[in-house]
Image (cartoon, rainbow, N blue to C red; front, side, top):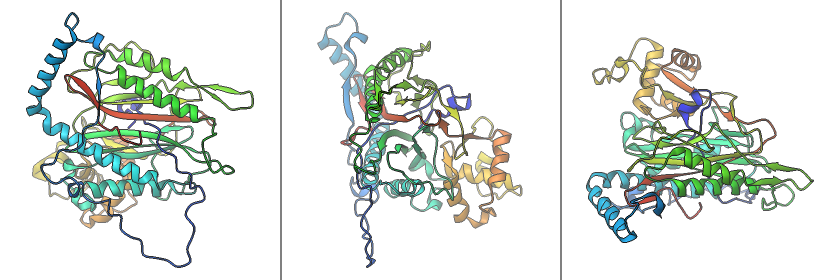
Length: 445
């Protein structure tokens, strides 16, 4: 997910995602006159039914650190032995955390591979995200929104699904009544998160929709833009490591990203640029942006990555000006943890129904999302499911009040210039003592 903190500071930096398989069923499935009952998808059910209690979840892809960075003067055998010993010693403290991450990653893979089969031209964006998020809820046993109240910390959606089209790079998710549909040749970024016990997997990919005439996207000149972000993200992952300076990673990402270009075939060639005010980030429990930003261009941030940290390594490429700005209707929100009143978070008031309508709304948000980001569609579900809140779907003015007061942060879509195209690629990695693990890695990307 895009670096929320950075965007509030007039877009210091943001987050990314990776390309995925393209579905060429542009015409959609044939319509049948005889309506048949839809069969339930037997592959979408609580993850515990696939992995019984006590079963370990699959590990991600392991990658060695750059040997030139660690234990200078030691031979390879000594270095490997020391690091593996430290890893084994750290298992007792971190094993549950790592297994939670792998569980969230397994759910992420299953959810995204399911939706990848269904995406086609003509689909409403809101239908895509609802399907994706409903499946996430089923895998994490939070299908009923009322189950999420005060139990959201156990697992569920990590942040609102970003479904950003063409020049929109990030932070777009449909609100109620949004009937936007996928068009031929659209470039779509899908960025979503899953968490288990606050351990968040943040991963994204980009898809180009097929051409109307050819019914394929293989000849689309913007395929090189997708290759650029995948290559740049892979470069960032390879460069990442314990004690590595963030500025060094950004420099390597920029060099790779900007080596690509888009040949439109009519004599016009567009350079691929980094969206320089978007970036990756570290992830902390229940906090999608943990305070460190991984740049995708060269800068002067000498902050170092540290052992055991979680990072979302993501890159954004664009054929536009290389800088995104805020534009459009807000949909992503999060509580400002430094400004939320104690009366809202106090356990003594856990069952209190406040007289003030804005307080009731804020309490509902706190009870169902805590420090996790959310969107208006999620809040709609909360309000419709809990009549005792005495709130209606006409809550937008009250939400605006909370935003104006600073207790809720609003994140608008991040957009490059009209006519430009943007792409994203993103993975979540863990920095173990001896190696790094791409936890969100899958067969698709």
